[in-house]
Length: 450
Image (cartoon, rainbow, N blue to C red; front, side, top):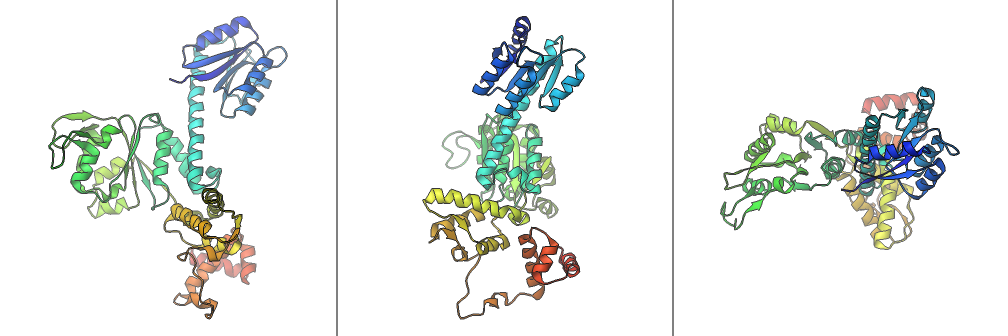
C-alpha cells in the first residue's frame, strides 16, 4: 500500500516526537521539521498530503508554513496546533486555509482522527482532479466544471454519490458521454483499484447476454468447451456498467434482478451459487419509464437500477460550449494530423452553433477532425464543413432558396434563436440586430418558448 506523505512541524522537540509517534499508526510517511523555516524549504521540494504545524514558533511561524503549503499544493490539508484559548487565532487560521485546528495540550486521539479525515478528503480531491482531466480530454474544455450549469450539476452529483454503493442510472442520447460518467463514478469510488467492466446489452440474444453476464460451465450449450466466468465475476470488487440496459431481453431482466437482490450468480448449466461484490451502473438512451408502462421493461428492475439518476444534457442544450469544444478539437487534430490550421472563421462557427448535433459531442469531434483533414488553408471556413451541416447552393440559385419548404414560423424562430446566441442572450442587442423593437422581440420569445 502506498503511504501518503505528511509533514509534522514543531520547534518543541518533545512535542514533535510525540506527534510523530501518535501518527505513525496511520498509513503515512512522516517527515519532521524542527522549525517553520525548515518546513517552508521542505514544502518547496515536495508535495505533502497533510501538514501538521504548530502556530507559534520562533522565526517562521505557522501562518507562514500554512501559506507555503497552500501555495505549493492547493490540494494539501493543513492541521494547525494552537494554544488553549486562542480561538480567534484559530478562526484566522481556518480563514487562511487550514483544514482543522487542535488546541494544546494536544489530544493525540483527536489529532489522529483529524489527520485521517484530512487524508481521506485529500484523496477525494486528487480523484476529482483526475475526473476533470478525463472530462477535459473527452469534451475538450479546460475547466468544464464551470462552463455550463447543466454539466456543473452533473459533476457535482457524480462527486456526491461516487463514494456510496448506490446503483446509478445514467440517461442521455448517444454521444453525450454516459460511459465517461460511469468511469468517473468508478474512479472516484473506493472501488477504483478494482476492475471497471462495461457490457453493451443491445443486439445480443438472451443466451448470449446471459453467458456474458453470468458465465457458463463446460457443456452448458453447443460451443461451451470450457468453464467461463461472466462479467459479474470478472468485475469482482469493482464496477459493472450495463450499457443500453433498455435493450435487455425480458427473461434476462428477471435473472439480473435476482442477482442484484441476492448478490450472487449462477453460471449457465450450473447449480452452484457464486457470491459477487459488484457495484452496478446502468446507462441507456431509451425512455425506460415509457418501456415500463408498455411492459417491455420490468418495473421492479427499473426502480432497483435508478436509486440515483443522472441525466446528461444533449450538446444542443449547451450550445455555449460549442466554441470551446471546437477550439480544443481543432488544436488536438492539428497535432494528430500534422496540419497548420490556426482558427475557424465566424460563418463556419455560426453554422456549427446552429446545427442541432444529433450525435452530440462525438459528432462534433468527428466533424472538426473532418474539417481539419480536408482544409486547404490555415483558417477553417464554411467550405470545410461536412455537407450534412452546411451544403453550398449552386451559384445560379438564389441564396434564399434553402428556406423553401419551411414555414415562416420555423424560419423566424430559428432566426431569433441564433441571433440571441450570437449576442450571448442580450435581448437589446438582438432586437437592434434584427430591426425589431425590444417589446416585439420579448413577445416573440414568449410565443416561441425561447
